[in-house]
Each structure stands twice: as C-alpha cells, then as structure tokens.
Amino acid sequence: MQQITQEKAPMSAAMLAHDVAFQRYAATRNGLHGEQFSPTAATEHLRTVCQIKSRKELATNAKAFQRFQRLHTDFEISAGRLPTPR
Image (cartoon, rainbow, N blue to C red; front, side):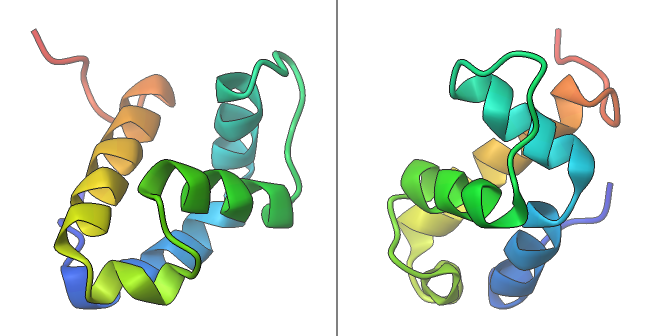
C-alpha cells in the first residue's frame, strides 16, 4: 500500500469515495450489510468519521488526517488489501 501524504489526502479521499469496495464498506459500517452507498453517501461517511465538513480539511487538520489514515487502513484490511495486524 502506498503511503498517503497529508497534502494528497483530499484527492485520496475523493478517489476512495468512488471505490465500490469502499462504498460497500461504508454501508456496512452504517448497519446496511449487503448494501452499497453512492459516492455521495460514501463521502458523507468519510466526513463524519474524520469529523470534517470538507475533504480539503484533511490537508490542513492533523487530527482529521490521522482519523482518515485509520479509516483508510481499516478499510484496506477489511477489503483484504492489507494483512490483518497481529
């Protein structure tokens, strides 16, 4: 997995919201098992988890960026793209 820099986080977040696997992940995290969010709903999930109003904040808000990194890592693990930590 490529490391996401804080300056590139808003773009990474936008791309993530259009990832079908992330849309399913976000729906599942919101209790909608077997469903898939739209890109707009996936973006809203991301903003809620990161506690931001705009993805642009990820580039300037260190705490929001840390939350985004945790969200992204959890998604990558759940999608089988990263091994589960031991």
